[in-house]
Image 1 (cartoon, rainbow, N blue to C red):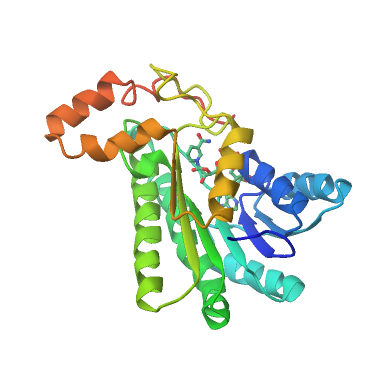
Image 2: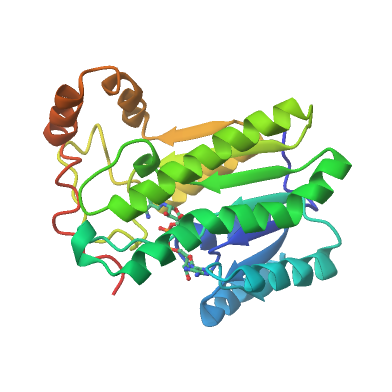
Length: 269
Ligand code: NAI
């Protein structure tokens, strides 16, 4: 079991969406949360909410697209907490446009935040976790890290890489006989605003998830040391679809409305 009581927790992208909700719940469960985000005002507001409920949190300004910023955020956090027990790589961004409509810079930024930051944050905290032979590295990836779709070429590629990051890190930790845990989370769309405008054809199979319920399940998975959480359950069928010929699995993704899901995407304004 990974308990949050009195644990030092780094949570990236803590200023909004599921990051904010996770921060509130982890603090309520007795965790000391280092809120990492680029959005200072958002972080301060979350810290205010945590303090008001009697919890402990610090805000650490960090631009996850900048390796130096991550290094100094890690040093600041270790200075305040002494040790970090749980790292939750949650921050993520989406462009939501066709491949030729996004700029080179947007593609790079997507990979910087959604993928490369995982390397820099984990490399900052893993050595001490290995030394203590305890710790937990959580990757908030996406169902888009299991199946790709239109208007998300940069996003899905970056999340496929995030899933690969978790998979390989888990294997590496096993080879090292380490007790450091990893958990990867692959949700379908969550109603946080990040993916505003997306649609689903069969909501009873592929619902747009509610943030509160999603966070409850994510934190439950971390608590229970689950290696992987995919939600909703229907997304697990992606693995079976992969066994079918590509034309058939593409047809299925089309039929279930996944291929068109981003047609009316507006995202955060
Ligand atoms: P959100 O947009 O509400 O929150 C993302 C947070 O990341 C924001 O506070 C933002 O300021 C921060 N952030 C963005 N760029 C940053 C940077 N360069 N440095 C530091 N912080 C930065 O997003 P939401 O919906 O809470 O998503 C959280 C995670 O869940 C993301 O990784 C996302 O890809 C993933 N996810 C979200 C889904 C959804 O439908 N909302 C579905 C599947 C996965």
